[in-house]
Image 1: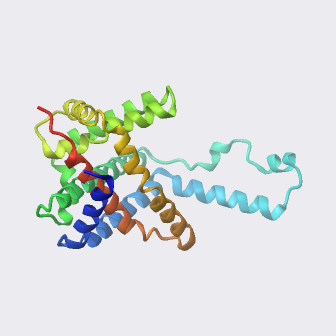
Image 2: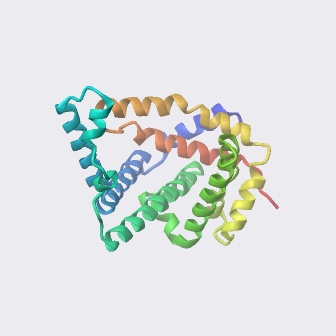
Length: 246
């Protein structure tokens, strides 16, 4: 199927799907925002950024003229900017990060349902929680493999990202498959299709740029409510077009 047809079909799905994809996307980003804010506070990252901003404001007000003067205004131990956090807070922050990743995986499953015009609603954002351990293993192994290939160079890392990009969707189609089998089948299905996937991802580059520009101007990522499902459903159609393995 031509790339423009995948995107056209995704836009059509977004217009005709009920309940409306917009409302599900709104719930999705609302949950991501809450989880992100909680994780940042519990990990101490929010307090760290406040300390950094306070330090930068102080340096700007004092107006040092040379690099030596700037360095003299910095604390001797830069790690002191990061507040100490309890083990409980750090642990809860780690759990929230995992929930964030699980929710992102669940959104991919939701987009797959929309692309097939299957019954769906906002509850499908929690699809990944039906087999949470397996989903986490798939995400971890994918990230590990991509990181290892990235040690060689950027391009091998990108190729690895494409190679294992279908693993989560394969899991939703075949929940009986092991995590390793999902990764292996993703590698087999994407064989010979990496360039097509690259071109499909690249075709969204202007959308991503516009999203960043609007967010920088108004401070709210409003375009993501359209772009995230548009991208996700298009990728689901790409997955649907791949040949089934025996």
